[in-house]
Amino acid sequence: MLIPKKMKRTITAEEAKAIIERAKTEEPLELEKGDLPAMILAAFIVFLPFLLVFIGSLGLVFWLFFSLLGG
Image 1 (tube, rainbow, N blue to C red):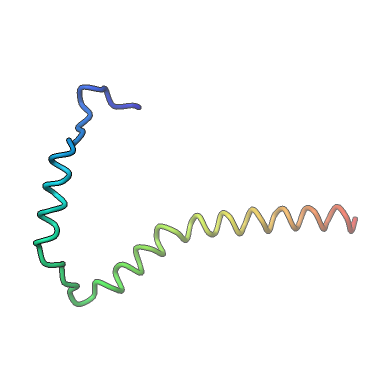
Image 2: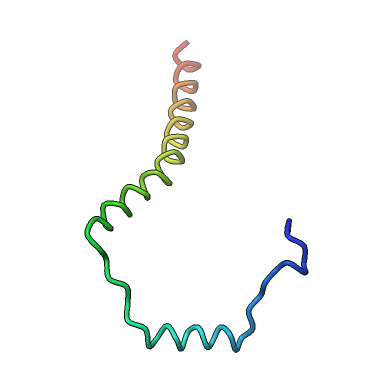
């Protein structure tokens, strides 16, 4: 949308098939020491702000709802 059409890089069906065939023959990557805690920490860094905003907005809605009913 923001990138001009001549700058967009699309792959053809032949290139996609070649990539899939090459991926079938390669062996999977092995995890190194400390990779799993790093992935978990990265997931927290990515998802925690959204979760906090969602929980905070729900808390605000409930607080306003019950304060208007109780008042």
